[in-house]
Amino acid sequence: MIGYSKFTLDNGLRVLVHEDRSTPLIAMNVLYDVGSRDDEPETTGLAHLFEHLMFGGSVNIPDFDTPLQLAGGENNAFTNSDITNYYLTLPATNIETGFWLESDRMLGLDFSQKNLGVQKKVVIEEFNQRYLNQPYGDSILLLRPLAYKVHPYRWPTIGIDISHIEKTDIKQVKDFFYSHYAPNNAILSLTGNITGKRAYTLSQKWFGPIGKREVKTRKLPAEPIQSEERKLTIEKEVPATALYKVWHIGPRLSSDFFTLDLITDLLAGGESGRLYTSLVREKKLFSELNAYLTSDIDPGLVILHGKLMKGIDIRLADEEVKKVMDHLKKKITDIKEMEKVKNKYESSIVFSNTSILNKAVNLALYELLGDPEMINNEVDKFRMIDQEMVIETSRNYFADTNCSTLYYKSTKENK
Image (cartoon, rainbow, N blue to C red; front, side, top):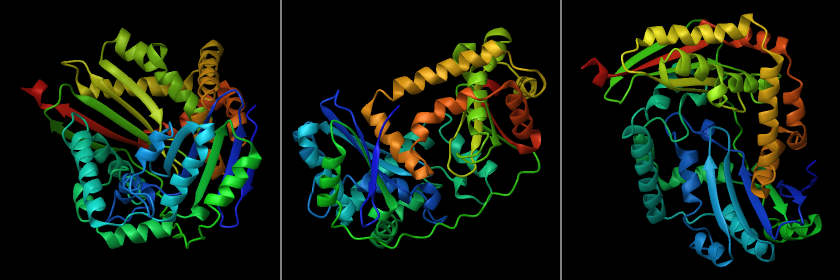
């Protein structure tokens, strides 16, 4: 069991603390309740741009990394559809450096044209390298608007189009910061060699003086239920033809979430997964094949993708994938197969939570979801899944009418 204490400052900042005396380090995690779903359709990619801007200097500190490194620390961040998350680790004796740095950039950024220009170039280069100049890189740019028609999950975290970042100006940046980056829209979690009392004292000292802000009210359109199969075919000069399929699922807190998580492990849990066993090793239709769920806070997706062997008709490969999916709906899953997946899941969770950084990230995320105790009971929820739940959940979600399919054909093979 992972024990923790929790308190909330007067300005709305929620703080969670897990004390672990076995380590000389402390992990500090600051989660902001803002992700790419909070971008406007005309200015997508702004949430992700902010992840970079937060390292470009704050009100009183022109350089974030140098003082942290001098104190023996390291840091990073990530943005997804739902959140923007900043984390660092430091020797316990130097943790106040972390409080100083994180509180100052929550207070305010260096809103200079120079800093904005530098970070825009970084993000534009990332867009080019990861999405435009890499084989299959644009697949997510094609899949999301195929699956989503109104919800902002229809664009990837980096944005719909590179021009949105290019056109971002200082006013947009300031408006975004003050309407999303606020103590009352953030969660601070601390794990490692720190007591709850010390965490409270330092939180009050460094974050307490930052005032509440008027956080923009989130009013997101609900995605309509998909009622017919959607297909898109493109041809590009890529090494091999690829198949992508996505199915709509419920939100992160839905009752089916863990069952769907188990199903994706049954399908693609390494070389023993059903997809690999049947379609890679036995029938030799694919060179690789994978499946996972997005774990989005709002209704998300199960995503399946694979690269075909040379000469294989993509329609045949698609039909064989459907047969594997249909098998889940009709035949009881073997108890031993399910137990193997459950054991693997439990060991990965237990191993993950030996890291103070992972515990800090997870505590903050579960607090955002409404219950930090989820860090202690997610394995139990996974263990409770039975054979009938697998069949029922598969029937509920893996229907053709709920599926969007991308045929990503290789022009090299056609030649």
